[in-house]
Amino acid sequence: MAQTQIVVEGAPRSDRGKNEARRLRQTGQVPAVLYGGKGEAITLAVNAKQVSAILRSASGHNTLFQVDLAGKHEPAILKDWQVDPLSGNLLHVDLLRIAMDVRMKVKVPVHTFGEPAGVKQQGGVYELVTREVEIECLPAEIPTEFKVDVSGLMLNQQLRAKDISMDTAKMKLITDPDRVLAHVVALKVEEEKPVEAVAAEGATPAEPEVIKKGKKEVEGEEGAEGEAKAEKGDKGEKKK
Image (cartoon, rainbow, N blue to C red):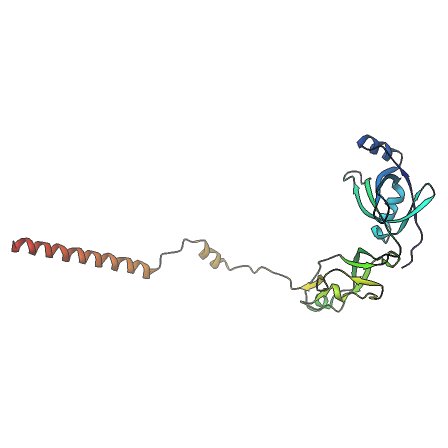
């Protein structure tokens, strides 16, 4: 789908290292690398506010933009980025150079709406399993999102990747078609055991009577055999 042209200001940089990166951030820029396509990988500094605005936009990291390098524009998208966990400021970004006439693989978020019938009528629980799917399409055809109505989802039913409505003439699904994106499952409730059952489980199990009896019988048989042998020995001695 067509998108409004967005321009990100960039400038080549030769110096590297933590000190240089820190200096750049203080001037409102962030270290970056532009690579991919037919061109060579180049290190540059880009406008941090402009990149942050792209990440916050509806299309997010799939936003197409032009990197302005001294008046020369190169189409790109955000491939990767690092953010300071404390301040939330960008630390570094990777920009992927793209060709508008070459299909590319991208991950697109899936947003569901509606209350599943399996929750409303059958008391189930709705769970979102996978939040995005991977597709292949031309850069200008990258969708912002896929929206799916799950109001008809019943108990023990799943929403799979193949259920997403998409224009197959423009895009191809790369994610496994049978990948579960969301489902409605039964609510698991642990039944409380009666106090008597819990007490019985806690008590030391008694040895079965059959086993006890068997042991005594075995001991008795061994004793009888011992007595028989002793009697035999006594008779043998008397004969002598």
